[in-house]
Image (cartoon, rainbow, N blue to C red; front, side, top):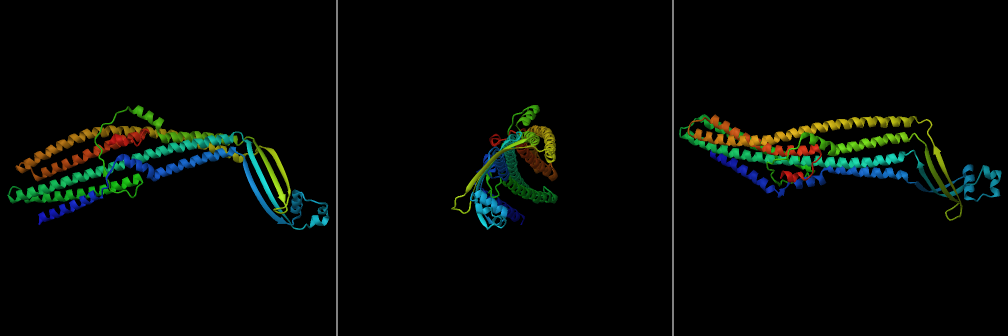
Length: 451
């Protein structure tokens, strides 16, 4: 009865593993996953839209240097005395009859077709426009730097999710191996019990061990599904199928002094660059608000043709001039200047705080990488020792020199040491990627360094 149950469980296991193999659609390398994420991820789309918005803003700011031209075609009709008098005058059709008092007081309805071209140009505004243009260009550069920061964040997220899937797959392999070992141990215990060489309690312990290994395998399957969900989210590919992933091997990465890594981060971090550019842009915003308090010189011109009907000839006129203006009660402009100055102080403090946080991020990543590198060597030694210890205890149990409890404890230690080893391998890769991200030097080329 029990053997048929084990056969059924094995058959179910084979079907599940076969389904996963059938679902695989080839090999997905880390570089392929990163490249796809940089194209399809919503975060990448947001960054591109931000850059396009900043480019449009820079173009809009430059347009303030160009003259403003407008064309107007106006069609009207009425008997308002002022309107009738002015329309006749502009149409240059005024006659002696139109001076009659009755005609002036109660004119007949008159129509007017007016074609107008008008234009204006700000010749000087105390350099306000030039500062706004420079500010818009800095925002464009800041958006470009922010896009680079978003790309690095995407790469970091994909590496982490890719590692999660690989680790979950390793855990399934370990769990499957432990299931096979537990089943073999149960068979051996059954034989020893029947031969009178072991107690019934040993059989019960072996059965509990089989159930525990089964639970671990189920949990590992759930972790794998979660890993794939995280990878889909990181890549921005909700329809991503189950692929075979290229394993990441244990590697040794170069060691760099912490002070050098911090200096690199302060110089190359794209988010710091973006904030520095925004700080410079805010400097110009303060300057533009101050310039708005100065004088303004504008030129304007207007040409107009008025006709009684579309096909009727009419009169035309023009006017041009230069206007000099100065706000002698600039209460609102002074408030704007105060507002921009306060925003400047705020971004100065934000940049200083961000630089401090970057120093902490780099220090943490540096320690994590050192710890991860040491963990691999320790985990490798522990795995080798636990494997040898399990082998010795199996021999001792078969010879009646060790208890079932000793054997199961050794199996637990061997299983945990394998899990710790692969956790250290993938943790080392993540720690290295984290350090590159913290120093602002993370690129898609990290895939070649890890695989």
